[in-house]
Length: 458
Picture 1 (spheres, rainbow, N blue to C red):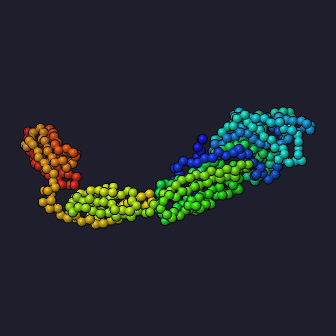
Picture 2: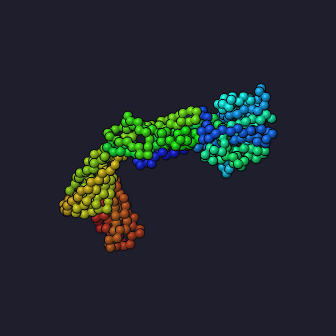
Picture 3: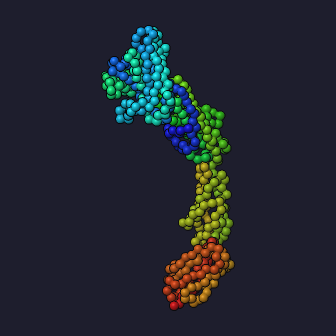
């Protein structure tokens, strides 16, 4: 099945259209658009003798439209038992002038008799089926061509249709022209027989929403829903009657401010129905989706630790994602995070908790006390450096909890920085080091550190 572009029918506040669209095949439908907008009927002669060889009528293709034939209203002129052959054609159109473009894409024929039926148009209806259906994606023209010497009267309408769309065309002699060229804005009752897909789509920006809130509904429908040539509701400016939402057991006629109230936590099924009243066939299709309703999150956290390293644990309710700001320029994410503050003092720590529903924020002042010498010595990683003095290389042995190794010169400038997580021995090449005193420092993940002097000689 070919998928066509869907058009939005409401402003999207919390939803976006991303779910799979639902489609239903519709038809055959015979488009009686020209009859509906006509204020009267007239007869137009189609004959080889008058040089009016073909009459045609343009139709939109707001999406893929499959044309399988046409209907028209008319009669042959002649003796009671006479008949005339008339051809029906499907043409592509020229976007520049809406005239038939190229040769017919497909054709068919029918015999027309002379019965007048006291002017009853319905009884003078004829159907031509093309040799095969053709799907059109822009616009198209259905046309009738005289194929015998017997003149044929074709029904249309006079200038009083009120719209002046100038969609009727005629082939007079060789060229095609719009009927307005002949000082007449007619609409011929040449009605294509069409099939098309009706579509519906509804989905959500998030897979969840907040219980206890109103949400504006939004959905999408295909081009035929909005086209007055295909949908009688569009023709009568009643588009909103095409759409209905159903959720939580209630059917909501669509308006520009249709909304639903999400009352309880859990799955909320939503359906959207797109329906049109065609000229001879009605059709509808329903799309389904489900929204999960959550409670709004409530942020909270606890701490463990009385020194520079502190462990933070989110104790939030209904949270899915956590973002931490430790008040010292550093941030973090996750349920449980370990953070080492740069110095003793008071820090405002902020936790932001989100879920598919909304977000909540909590801030608390965390006081980090002075870290004593005994604690520093007890927790500091171990370090040895040899040979010392060294010339071309030095070996640094560390305890297994060290994660960083840094070398500073006598002026306090950083010379080298290495990540050594999981390593207990590191070889330090000294080829680029100038002779002098250096300081080799290692630190663990909690910020505890140990330093050794290293003398580099020639």
